[in-house]
Length: 149
Image 1 (cartoon, rainbow, N blue to C red):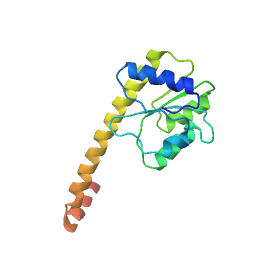
Image 2: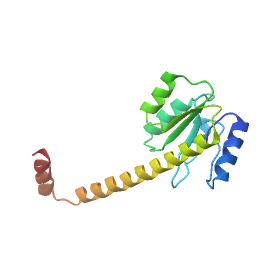
Image 3: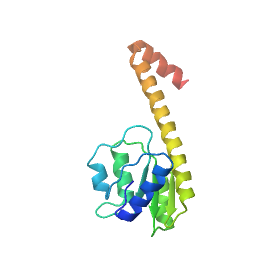
Image 4: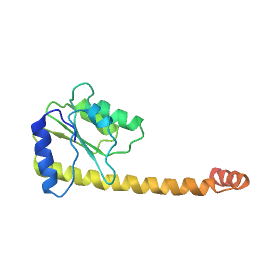
C-alpha cells in the first residue's frame, strides 16, 4: 500500500490484516520502486496523489518494467478523466475517499483473483514458449503455415 498519509496507511494496514492478509507499507511511489516487490499473490493499493511521483505515474512505471500487478487507486481528489486513465491502463478499481471498509475489501478480493488469473496466464505463456522453442526450424515453418491458414 502506498500513501503519503501515515494515518491512512495504518488504517488500511489494520483493515487488511484483520481480514488475514499481509501488507507492506510505503510512504511514496519512489520508496516502493526502490525495493523488490513482494512475491506471491498480491495487489497494490495506492493513492493517486503522491509526492514526486503520482500513483498514475507509478502505474505507468510498473507497466514499463513489465510488472503485471493489479492496482486499486484511492483518492480524495479524483475526477472522471483521472479514473478513466487509471482504468484504461489496467486498474482494477478506483475508490474515492472516504470509502467503506467493505468496498475496499471487495476491491482487494477482486484484485487478488485477478492476480491469480494473471499468474496462470503467464504460466501458460511460458509453457507455450518452451514448447515452441523445442520445435525444429522446419516444425516452426510448418506451424506458421498452419496458423496462417
